[in-house]
Length: 326
Image (cartoon, rainbow, N blue to C red; front, side):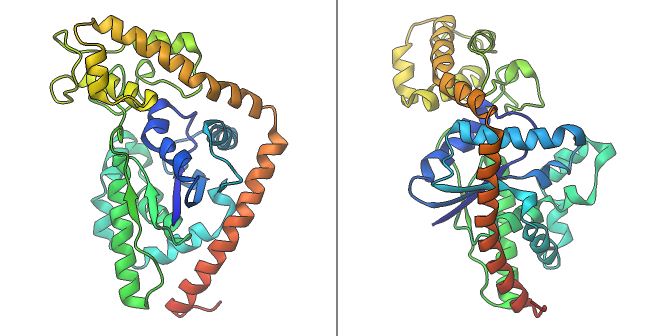
């Protein structure tokens, strides 16, 4: 099956990105036909530093590779290097109801966060995301829960388009992790871990071991002493249990037994040491790749060429179906 996903280049990957989405990518590239990209066009819908953007794009591509994406087993490229993404987005915009875009949760949230930067691109963000997915005739979209609404809109767009112009697109479905679809902030466990939020609550995927340990030891926990998974009553310790479980592969109930009658500090110390070791290979690989710019750019160029072949084929079908000249 064809798989597609991407992340915005707005800073280095953090633990939530990896456990919530990228870990799925690494596993699924071994058995499916995967297309992954740096979605730089999505990044400019919210305030950004244009001088920093180019570096962010390259560094996110490095992050992808350091985290385990294999260019021999997937297509990896930069979104804006394949112009068919924006071309298809325009065409899909002509069949997408305005009301559907206005009700998108992300549009409402970003509009509140950046009231001075509410642009048409932000409103049309889900259409571009639909184009990203549909351009490659995607079957599965591995995402976090916060992007599920966008995939559902993509499915509605497919149904409307196919009903009007004939069977052109597949109807993709979201692939959510069974646990860890939303890793929460260590400092504010009621909020999602974010690189733009409280930095004490966010662990970078390539962070130094000592910094990781300090953040885990300072993580917010809950009243009581029991190390039990209960997100509604014990969100802090539940988040830490989720992180430990996903990183170690141990089921949460096994961790609960392992730390039964232990103190929060004992649990945190164990998690901190485990995470520091778990993330060390990623940090070493990233450091190496940052010195190999020609090699990384060659991977991205070859990825763009492969993506373009698929994208152009899809656009031929779309234009024919819509009655446009080819």
